[in-house]
Image (cartoon, rainbow, N blue to C red; front, side, top):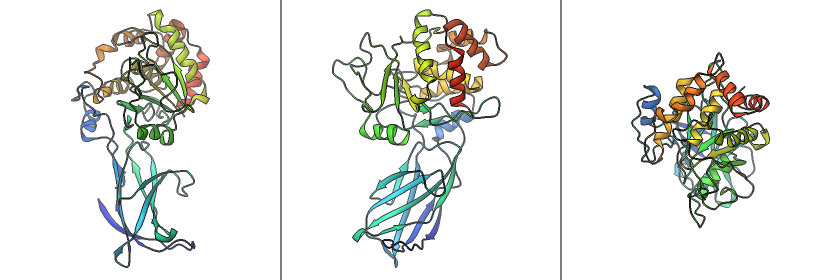
Length: 362
């Protein structure tokens, strides 16, 4: 990392001029750990992670700085890091710390960021650094760190066969937010994780695919994220190795799910089952497949769940039944084949598929 001295001159009455020393995070910031990058850059069938430990979180972006007044470290009660996609910081995410360094996660892929730091000084005065900038790497998936849950990521960020990209920040997938099959509710997502989900990711709707009939939902009737987040339970049996497209018992759940996806007022939304791999992976395959993501990338995304603590490894044999059904269906592209299956086998409305595509693709 390169160290550069930055100075600010400000005419604001409560601003003082400090000498800021900003640690440049680099021009191209990587969002994946080394182990994740090795997998994403290599053969998608070969993954080192075995689904038995938490390896799904992205790599942190570390921001560091110092502020001095005539060579003496500034006396400050608090620093505020601001990150923005706009140079004027009209919309920004703020992080407060009493240290001169902070780790930040969950940045958008392939995006130019502007950042600055403000010091709250004694006597109510402030000093703000000059603006620095960096670009995040574009490689999907946009895996996420949400404290208290595993296997979280954005469905967006993947390139499509037509040369576009699936939009980020609209649909998230993850493991459960509360412990399953409890007679007393045990919320597993932490306060920090809730804040990330709501304040940073902007989640407005939680779709829970766990069964209510056997209390797999763990006794909840509202979202652990808070009463201001819409909670929808779509009870669906465990789907590992099942052909959810041809087994009619799954069809009501699939149709209800796509009705929710077609309503833009539900976004951004997060959906999950128990560990966010099989039932969740099934819908992620359909959504991104409809959006035009390449077949190999759909497989790579499914297997990426092995980086989560999901109770054991998953392989492509788990999704082979419904993938085979899709590939045998009518259509010139995988996207068209998935659409045909959903309409003619499951009974999903074409208007809902069209609405989903319009929401998720540019």
